[in-house]
Amino acid sequence: MNKTLLLTSIWFQCLWFLAVVGQQSTQLLLLVCVVATVVFSYRYRGIPLSWLLMIVSAGVAMDIMHGVTGLFVFASLPTAGIPLWLALLWVSFAWYAYHMRALLIRFPFAIVCMVGALGAASSYFAGLQLGAVQWPYSHAMTFVIVALEWAFIFALIIYSLNVLEKRRHGVKAHETRPS
Image 1 (cartoon, rainbow, N blue to C red):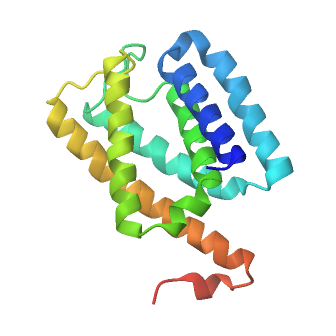
Image 2 (tube, one colour):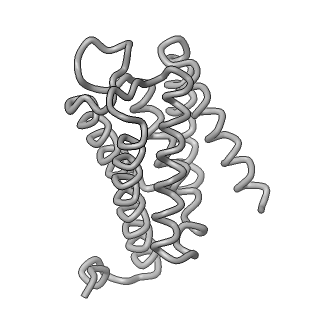
């Protein structure tokens, strides 16, 4: 594992703990850290903000749907929706996925989607255990639903990263569509 990947992974884990363990009490610090991370990555690493926004929008929409349907309940919210710390966690995750792009597109699509889905659902389960979210329905059912949704999120990430990679190498937008 290279040094940059290791540092990026450690930083993402710090942001995850700040979000999930700290929740509302560390939201302001998390906001500052996430904004600084994105600004640095945009300025020095060229992270495409439109790509970041697409992934964040998909994830936030998914978690809002969880709140609306009652699959997730956040004690800090009187109504359906998601807390700011979770939206910031989505920004952090999209940032991390972009920095992991070389690994994500190197391995077989199905394997990455499956491993990513299980890892993400496990992360939500950890959030449940840490009191960041409540799962009113059975834990097994909620875990399976979240894992299936995350398989689609990873499919979106991998497909869009492949498109970005092709465009970076001069392939035109209309040539990146599947046949």
